[in-house]
Structure formats: structure tokens, C-alpha cells
Image 1 (tube, rainbow, N blue to C red):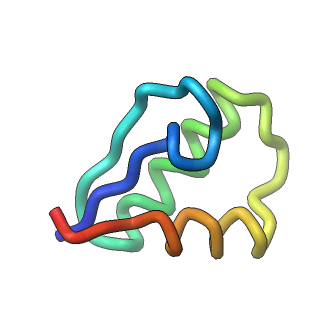
Image 2 (image 1 turned 120 degrees about the vertical axis):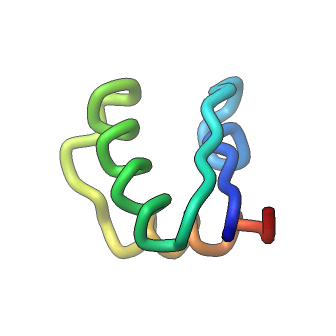
Length: 56
């Protein structure tokens, strides 16, 4: 199980995610769209999220 804090990439965002890497990436894509207006999940964003994940 892993954990990701959106605030590690988007300043002042308190949202956190926990689960498998695939679960987190799917949830982050929805969150990024709904809460941050991100229309496209780029490879760079995926790489940044993966790099900020830690063991939970």
C-alpha cells in the first residue's frame, strides 16, 4: 500500500490518497480534473505523482 499527498505537488492542497499505485493514479486523475482544472494527465504529472508516493 502507498500514500500520496497532493500538496507535495500542488501547493496548499490538503487531499491525500492511499492504495495501490494504480488506485492512487486513477483517483489523482479525477481529483486533478475536478479540483484543479487539469484537463490532461500528462506523463510528467504521472511521473511526479509516482515520485511523491511513499509507503503507507
